[in-house]
Length: 395
Image (cartoon, rainbow, N blue to C red; front, side, top):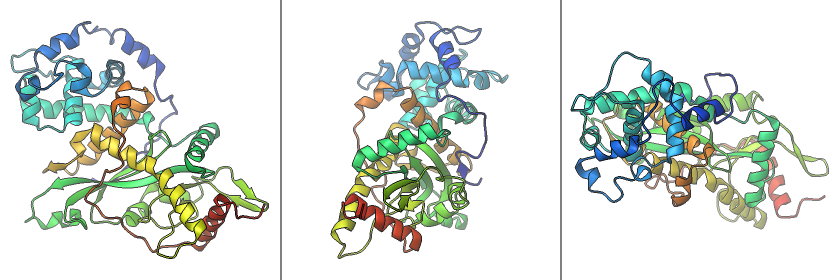
């Protein structure tokens, strides 16, 4: 399966959190109301190693999200998950409710535990866990897509620019781009797996993301083999095509001095090419004072993308660490749904995020890549911005 581009499918614009769905979540779920003590009953079934952990009966400890967000997610996927004929049951033959199924899927994605461990914890066989998780992924792909979209209005983009500028003063910045690797264990004797073997001698799949100042993912592409460089992945993305054709990052320019205008752009590390719409840091030794100052501001602002990808992997641990023999055709879709869930927690202002430590180490075993590609128009633009930030650009 080819890479998944987060915005490829066009849907009618929707509010990030569907208020009708949210209202349904706070009441009953369709014609089958969930018992008010659902979690109390469900948590009593937890067994195995999970039952011995601290706070194993606490909702947020097991599922890593608040009850409000859980109810919202249930309402999002209810129609798709409950419309099919097959009925899932636990080991005692008891049918699994919508809440049961969503809890199993979220535990699988959030804990990264094996199918057998999840099955043991919740009293069902691992085949049931696998099928429920995949049905949830399919439903989220369809129903949660509006949580991951490029800013659709000028006002929304202006708000993003303003928040980026408040970080370290970069004007007209629309996003920060970064890449992370989802590491896999694959059979070494199969030559077809060589394309997944990356520069750090891991088998991996790449996720590229553009992030806003609130760590929300605004554009993602996932599915490219880890053997490809950051620059190659970028050049093969829909983002690159849209920006090169002037269909994205084509909004208001800002005047930074008389006769000098700054277009919209995003920022990325040295692994990306320097382009008119993608500014990277200065490289090499002997940098001037204004170049050093630019790099400091650039790095501090870009940190939001690193923290977002770190939080994504920490929150949805199925894609953290090393995945054992994953289905490479399904993995991009699983990663994409983890991205949707990441954004939903932000959109719902879920309080569990307040307790998460902020770190920027999402690819700890990977060295910084270097791209030598420099667009001269972009180089001039970066110099002008650097002089402006240092107060050395003539008014």
